[in-house]
Image 1: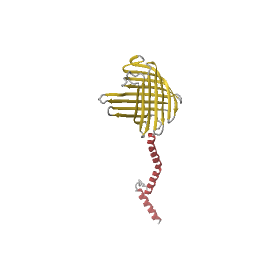
Image 2: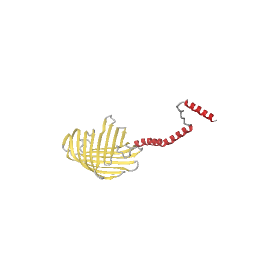
Image 3: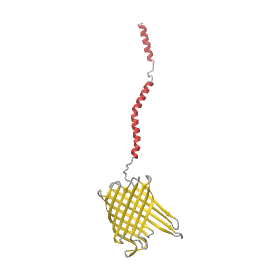
Image 4: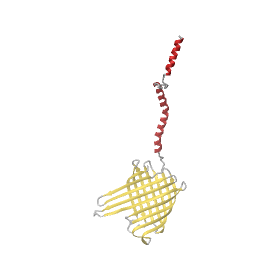
Length: 299
């Protein structure tokens, strides 16, 4: 019996010598693969969620803009009036009022174009209005109540033969009322006026086409938010001359706006200009009352 076992052991050893040296490849079971896949999915879920949240938040952060970011705001508008019958007339008025506000300063830009034509029953056509104006003002707060300003303006009137008038002014102003819904400012300073005419004009016993004057600039303006949809704004400025041609100019404009939508409003306005040095035979007062539609700019 012992001999048989010994023989068997020797045979087994001889057979093992003929086996190949390479081992059979290890193959994981299906249960093990499923466990590994489940662990990988569970461990990767927090990372995927974090990456998804970061990607979703990135566009929102980049597109967000502060509401108080300085930008031009205001309105531009147009109004037109037409009549027919014994006298046909057409009047067009375009106006602009924009401002750029920062914590310590404000830039204002205003302008208008007024054109009018009249035709009588005989067929004669006349120009009843041909005037435009453009002005800008920069205000800088020196204290919470006081501010310094500089102003530059241009205007032309073909009806009164005014080729070009340039107005330059600088001075100090005071915030009488400065609130979120109501503002009221007064200002005073020095001004320089340069007026050029297309025809000979007599001013203070002097006849010519080019006159200059140094004088004062006195102004007041206010804005009021009467309701959530109704606003009122007005400005009055005077240029009394002290030297030279001694200009006598007065400017007044006012407008009442009623919002119809977020972007459009109905406007009723008044523009009055007084020129004490108008050419002979021309009216010194020029008044326009208009109703039109304004487009809001800057939100």
